[in-house]
Length: 304
Image (cartoon, rainbow, N blue to C red; front, side, top):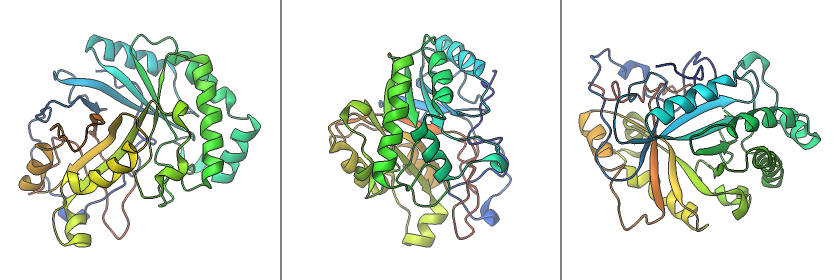
């Protein structure tokens, strides 16, 4: 497989975010890779190509920056998705993946307001308009996150909404057939950043289960529902379809099985939930307090 020349949030240098203690990461043989059981539509971000030949995957998730991006990669991704009858979910991050060259939040905010980044969005949207696969654009996700990992997060809500609307208006102008996913982390303040019904065809949430974190912070294993339910309730209040845009879980066999057997189960409690997309890669931003970088890949997610 040609992996679209796109990897998540940079060249994976330092791979991090949501972590497990480095001392817990044990060398082990790769486990079989299978689509989790259930009936909810399933997608995957899969730069290793582990799910290339797996049936039951209906969404191919891509991450790309709007600076320093190789645009023909989108055409490669389109061919790959078409051959497997998959739709494309494109997460567009408004920065460069070269960490030493990234702008500040203030520079990005002012640049969007002044139209300095219009060419970046137009160039990407023009390619999206040519793709044959159904395309959903997820722009500047997790804006409600307060950890500081993204320069577009934790802005004043009005500033974020203005920037989001300007950029997605531009994307729709040049690629009118795409859908828009507004994608907060799902925290209590997420509604402050809601851009309006016309700017969100679907709402995407983030759900990661890390057993080491659960035990240290909560004294017990948390379930998918423990984390997802309050986020879902906040999202469903807008009356839009809801998806899990980023999903991962790491722990011992019992923990992984508990999550695996639940994530695609359709429940009356979540009538607006339309699908889940697994993040099948090592994270790139470490969790705080020494929790390192979990390997969410299904072949490595079980810790001995």
